Image 1 (cartoon, chains in turn yellow, orange):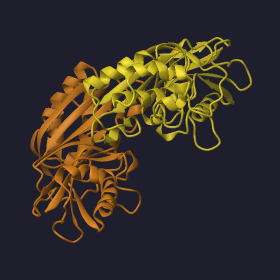
Image 2: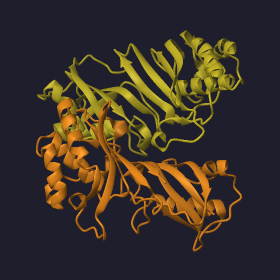
Image 3: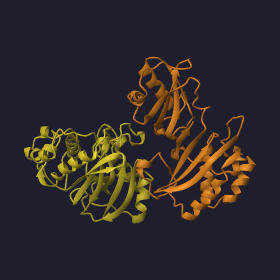
Image 4: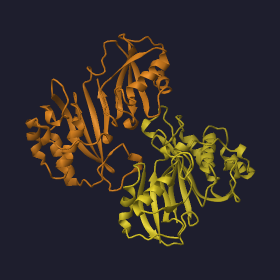
Length: 252
Length: 252
């Protein structure tokens, strides 16, 4: 069996999810915690690779003994979160955990993932949201919000999203199926929710930048169809900063 | 004239409000911002001295030219917040500002200050609240909340609060008038609001620790009257950690 962890983290202090030479990663902290808990090295496999400064309300990762397909563990399932959390820093928390079969893969078995991107619209920043929203700091009125939703509707469906992929990325297939794309106001923030079977590099951040271009009247909502069809990164909007991005839900 | 700043900050990264030899303080950051903005050294006088790790939803400070009773400034009042914020880190923000007379004193002129102390009650921590709540992580039920409010009611009035002052503190007068003391549930947190004309060192944190002792049945609500009258620190509860404490409102 493997252990499947459901965790939440503030990405601000980390170089991203994945282990890197420079900087501390979420994966490294999970590796250290697993080693402290079990006394041997473990393999940690995540559902996704979040970038530097990106957060997770829900992220999934499996734990197995290093080089093996599973792990022997006598810890009762309900005790797993606190057992791991006692070895983790306060900005990474295991919310729940369960035992799954050796065959389970946290990335390949994902049905869909949902991201939320938070755009702060008050003119004066909130220090408690520093690093946790995009400090856009301009009003997005009802008309602009409506346009953003009209534009977002074009994302839904199975498309080649090359126009919404950072250059330099090398993936063989750039077709993804988006099942949800909506923009809602939540107090001082405007939030973009998007769910898909997978995401290209920087896809949500470029989608967000494009929706802001729509809000500002630089791109009209019905141009989005042509932007997608163009497969041309230069036709989409800017890449929004990582601060506002959260992996929100992972569905298996 | 002086400039009166209304600011908000996350205390996590700071050694407290006041300039100290070791560590960076909020006051130091304000001093640096004022010098960058005006080109000369300034005196920054705060309404209070918050401790290491304590936060502010509202904090007040005045700015005058170093060694002088006021400052010459041509910045229009509405432009003051953004002018200062452009020189401040993202975890300190000026929310509003106004010009006041040279005679104004941000500490002596306070009518009352309100603090809020946030106690997190879910069993599993929330990484986004790390350093921003007391991770008590135990349930506080309706009965316990009721007892906490019965106890808090004894704080209201003009009392010698020596029993709620950290040892080693040297103030000439330990009498303070508390005008509000209530405990409310707010989602995953229980919040203690307390307003007074002034506070002794660690007073809110010791009050909070005492209310938790009441919630846990270690002290009965009607014992609080005797605890106050005893002027004996050892009869009150523990000092709650700084993380959950916020200066919430300053009234002139």
